[in-house]
Length: 175
Image 1 (cartoon, rainbow, N blue to C red):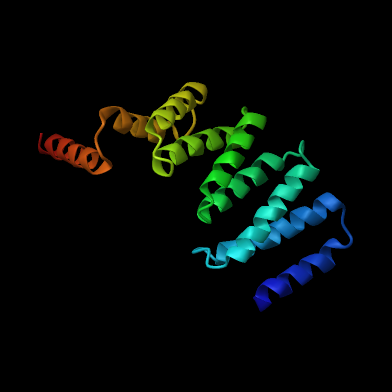
Image 2: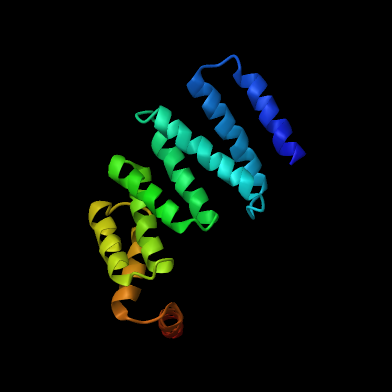
């Protein structure tokens, strides 16, 4: 906790000479460094503080080039803190407001992922995975989306699919 307060004090001193936007970016970047050191997210108060920083930036600077990235980080933090509905709503906002960006595409994939894995709403997950594949056919997550869609359409569990893939791999290796 002392380390957090010390870092925040340093950020406050450094940022006193900068613009409001630059001050916020400095605060966000400093907190990001602390969060990276806390990979298991043991300090929810720090994550909550960063969530607020990121959303405050997005409110103050809605057209800024950093806003979609910061909103995506905000959604990721919410998800890591098990605030799934909050994460979903932020991913939706990113996809709705920035659909033609990498962050918008990532957000759509994450909405499908949350429908599948957290909400267990498989029809919605299928819908979102299919929409993601159609809208972003060159995205690096397309193969993952297709695999999830195939699994959902098969009606099989992940474990059953893995066994089938392993069996196919073994039979291919023997040929």
